[in-house]
Image 1: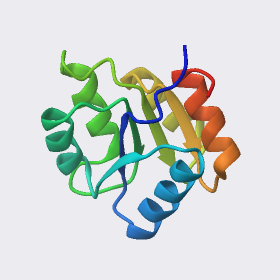
Image 2: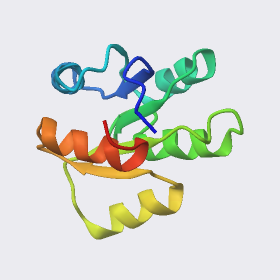
Image 3: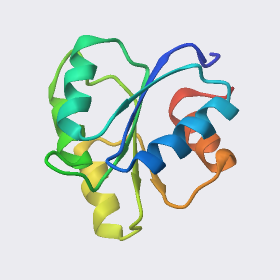
Image 4: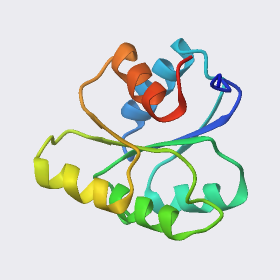
Length: 128
């Protein structure tokens, strides 16, 4: 199954610079419909208003962090199917276990490049 590069992708991070980096990498991978949110609460509102095919979210944000957002997404029958990639600067095994238990699709440790991002996306959506 081919990945729909026109799907809506939601990127969530409280650092504008990181949003810009991820947006740039997604564009390099030919994704065209990219929306941003600066925290989990804003992301949840957008997810409930629009259809998204992928969420890429930072872990450490206030007031709602990425793991709380992930739990909300997985608890919502309308959203629970959406692939969710968690981005973090920490590669601690307990964080990975927590994310896996919450239903994360994949886990991405900063810093990363376009090839790493593509591999993670392909892992949850299929090759493109």
